Length: 434
Ligand SMILES: *[C@@H]1O[C@H](CO)[C@@H](O)[C@H](O)[C@H]1NC(C)=O
Ligand SMILES: *[C@@H]1O[C@H](CO)[C@@H](O)[C@H](O)[C@H]1NC(C)=O
Ligand SMILES: *[C@@H]1O[C@H](CO)[C@@H](O)[C@H](O)[C@H]1NC(C)=O
View 1: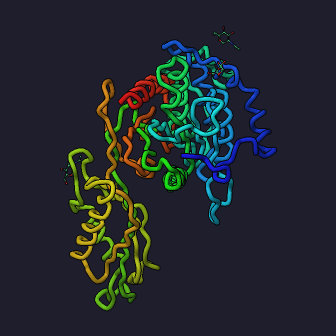
View 2 (view 1 turned 120 degrees about the horizontal axis):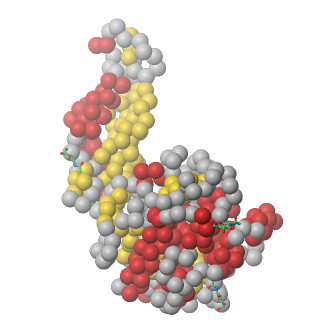
View 3 (view 1 turned 30 degrees about the horizontal axis):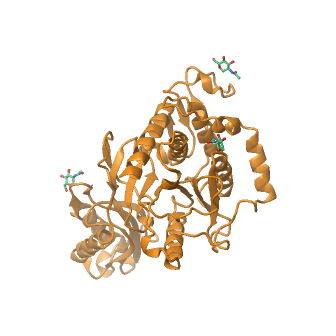
């Protein structure tokens, strides 16, 4: 892929406020410590790893306002001898803010990767987080509260908490550290990898979708289009340090019930939309909507219920909003198969009063998990994996647990982070050499 000068913004065009942010970060130990990543295999990278992770977490980046963290990351990667390009997303009416994906590849002289992304292993995660912002904190019996950070006092069991520590800035910091270590020790050739940190994963994956379309678009006008293919993509999301064999798909849907209003004392004169909705939802919750050995059962979450106007009025309208975790079929077919089954269930309950509004989605996503030395798992959450088009091999791996990822207690231990650096090193080498 070639980066057209119109499509990508070189980082020289930073705003005044961005420059202020960057000079602020210059005061942090990040600068010197990242430059000093050791080449040995021991955990002597703890300080630069934790510094990078802390600084990423301390810059708020709730989906839609990720600009500050992209500018910070651009600078951190440049210091590690990557060439960095910020890919601006088109502004929309609902999101007029400046937003960028961060794309980087090893080497300081190349302004474009010589052979595009062809045959590279893409190492990727997202830099947006869910609200609200929760500041970085360290929890350890060894450190009195509120004492300034002294990384030499830390222990592998020390807990790090804050928004994004797990989802997914833990993955971002561990991936960058692993890639820098592998390049430093000459374990992988510089042209074998590229890094991509996208925005918007927590909402609709617009960052990855835009990157994916730009890759297709550039390829289409490139003379080498038939050879433009990523070798693999390694996605960083919390998998508790296990290699995910894939994750369930997701479909969004609404069940709409239409009745006839009337006095609640004479139910036979009207038709209760709320009552029929409850029966329809009961049918969906009890139905076999599809299962598979790898992904288990398709499950339905009734997330929102709306309907009726008063306790003593027969409800004319009611609706429920659902998130369906799809375990059946493949990425392309799974959601539609489950949608069809849901329609049949509702028709059986009341074909006149109930209607399914199917918002679409995707079926289960398979990832490669046959790599020596990794425990495996299957995830029940969605990721950017299906948003990157192409027939590359996908891997899904990262530190921390999804069970705390969006909670007030989001956090992981130093050992989780350091284990992930080692895991990414093995995974990147495996993907490059495969
Ligand atoms: C970046 O490259 C320069 C020149 O090759 C080298 O001296 C320096 O150690 C490198 N820095 C890192 C962080 O690898
Ligand atoms: C950090 O802790 C180490 C070991 O406890 C100590 O020797 C050092 O002086 C401390 N550094 C700072 C800046 O407090
Ligand atoms: C799937 O659902 C069936 C019953 O419908 C249940 O027996 C089984 O335990 C479920 N499997 C999982 C993995 O939850």
